[in-house]
Image (cartoon, rainbow, N blue to C red):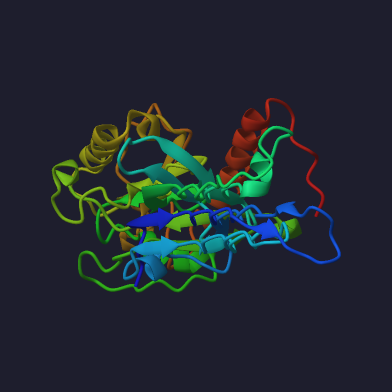
Length: 340
């Protein structure tokens, strides 16, 4: 099951209490206060793990508590600190405080860590309160409580290119044709019920990551069909590809509707660089040209067929160039030369 958004509650471990004790030892002259400090509570830490691709583990377990710190002891012994609780999440996970709406952080790369609930400090024992004029203190402190938070984990897949289109526009077929991914392909709407990723390979060991999201329909921003719940997965893409079937009655209307739905979801997403793919070119008669489509905002309009391979290589090469251009822009200069 693909789960891309969950809300959980995390608890930092409370610190241990300080001890009240006095040294009574036949070999130690005068003795004195010897209560140790309590140990620090463990923290709850999120860690990105590339082996994970879903937040399913957190669908059925809402509460996550780190270990508490141990109490201080006599003979100035400090209590043991509690163990941190490490929760593994897929790279691309965004963390938001559910109560304040504040973005806590995000984990993008393998091994990234984020502390979401800090453990409490250990309380001081009575030895810490001793002074020249207060030689037998009985004061001690309880440990501090750890942080408690309700957080939302939201997975946004990391891909270079996102496919956008109505159901049965040929997104899954294209993904299967250009990568090793094997999404379900069938001739009925909403075959794809969860996002799929594939790595598209080119010559000289070049590649880019392609994301296929479930089809959207007109009115998706109002919750129709599958709504826009999966569009978060192409928010991080560098460029988009709008798929318009060659057998559509009005290809330009299809394109404009798709653009309008993205605009209703996010102006930033709608403003991403994009191309238009006229898919299913194998359905055209011999010598027939695809219907003209006016898309001045697009960096290209390419006629493709996932069955015959028409236009596929051209699209892959141009997409690679566009992805590299976006990488250069993000880096603020020229990218490193490509070395196969």
